[in-house]
Image (cartoon, rainbow, N blue to C red):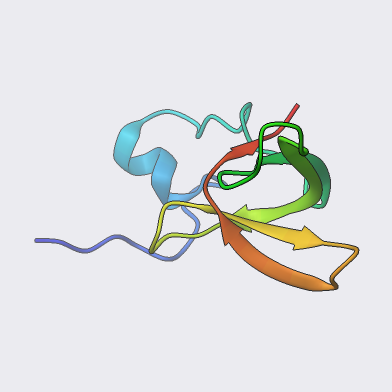
Length: 83
């Protein structure tokens, strides 16, 4: 049977009932935290990174959603470093 209950059991979430441990949230990033994106195609003397704001993870491409404040857009980026 491949079903998980969506209801709380004794105040714990369903993930805890399946794995008997609480989820590890220590490496979760803060929303809109500043991040550095590595620029792939640039000349030798140009900038190597740009600063953006981390929005979240993209499940399809395994990248990061990054908001660019100077362009007012959100893109999926792969060379993301969050300090």
